[in-house]
Length: 103
Image (tube, rainbow, N blue to C red; front, side, top):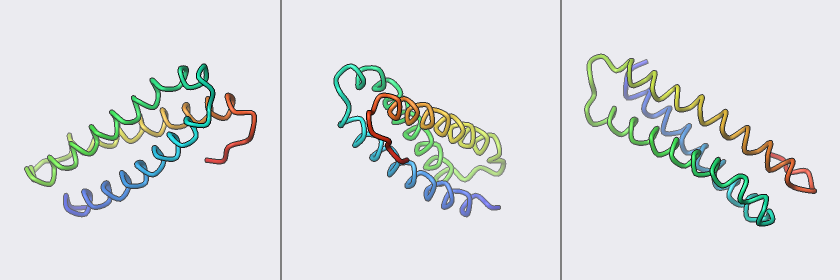
């Protein structure tokens, strides 16, 4: 896979993550104050991870290095971190909510 295809693929994945974050925020808004306080750090972490991944992809697109595998590894590591943090957050929201929340 060349760098252009990879960047396009990652942009698509990040668009999906942005939608998931929006959904998380909508669900967090429905929680009580105590539950929100327990989850806001996770939500902030998700935003920071997404921003870092976006920055790396933009850098890849503009710099176009001949060996871009180190940056690819960083981006993929960020994706794994996001997935883990998202699952942890959704699990907490599910436990905090009296109603089952799909997601």
